[in-house]
Image (cartoon, rainbow, N blue to C red; front, side):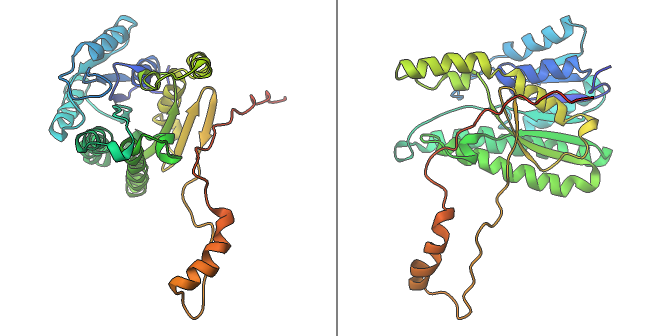
Length: 309
């Protein structure tokens, strides 16, 4: 008996990387899985192929599970509505969506084209809207549903050369949080996950020197796509019904719960502020709390000690 017995799960981007492992692990845990993948390149914009999604579905069926494939794009609400209908027609239900589908079109902002901006926003942020909008009424009516949306440390911390990607990924955080708030009364849960894993996205980062090559080899060995996939599957299980509205991370065997923006300094001036007093009084009182313009490192945590009897 798996933790997803009786569940039907839609996994987008399920033909490769983390999505592929999400589909395989969900099936291993007893779910019937609709594997969606456009089958396109990392940059998007091509016609794609039905091959990757169907290969994963075949692998699930060969292992004794139940799966079907879909090669439509999450950028089309009509296409995602078709995925929902396919899940209902094929498996008789739909209970959860895991949505890691994505592309990259990196570049410094002062050189970024409108097309590269729009395409990344379309796949990540619009795609997340589409999978949620196509399913939310069904989840509310059945009083049960779970989403795992994919954010990124490129949004949470920032990353040079990824303004389009980072903006989309922070938008997904807001989308996930509010869906969780609005869905609570109908047992609809939503969480965001920022994975760190060795996939074709991380492989696309250029290697500039031997040190970078060494880091890449370490990454390939220690941060596998199955690790965030396991967290994704856990989050959609009934045993996690009290977990919603959170931002998680998975980096290797480290599971991370991220803070969410809250006020850290609140200054009041009885007579009101002027531009001059903001500069002379407010900013000096805040500056030791300013965040530096650098990425916060993901520090590996020591393995937890086994519980003592």
